[in-house]
Amino acid sequence: MTHKEKIMSWYTYILLCDKKTYYTGISSNLDKRVGSHKLGYNLGTKRFSNIKLVYKEKFKKRLEAEKRERQIKGWSRAKKKALVEGDINLLIRLSKS
Image 1: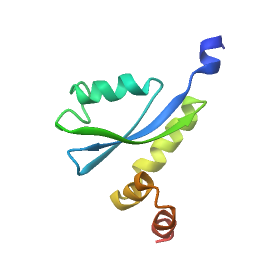
Image 2: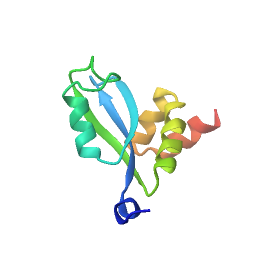
Image 3: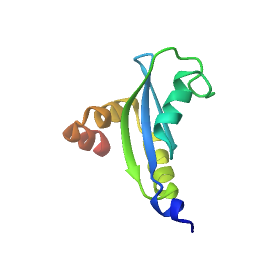
C-alpha cells in the first residue's frame, strides 16, 4: 500500500437533483465528482439541470463507502430526506416501519 492510499479518504454522498430526486454515489475526490455531475458528465444525473450536494460521509476505505452507498440506495425517499435533514428521530421511526 502506498502512502497516498493510506491517507486517501472516500465519501458517500447524496445530491439533490432538480429539488426532487436524490442521487447517491461515492468518490475519493468529492469536489471533482460533484463538479462532473453539475457539468452533465454523469449518466445518472445528466438529465438534471439543478444539482446540489446535500449530504456526505467520510470513510477511510472504499469498501466502507460502497457498503454505505448500497445501504442508502435501498432506502425510501423519505428516509433519505430524514438523513439529509439530520432528523434522527424520523430516521429511526422510518427504519422500524
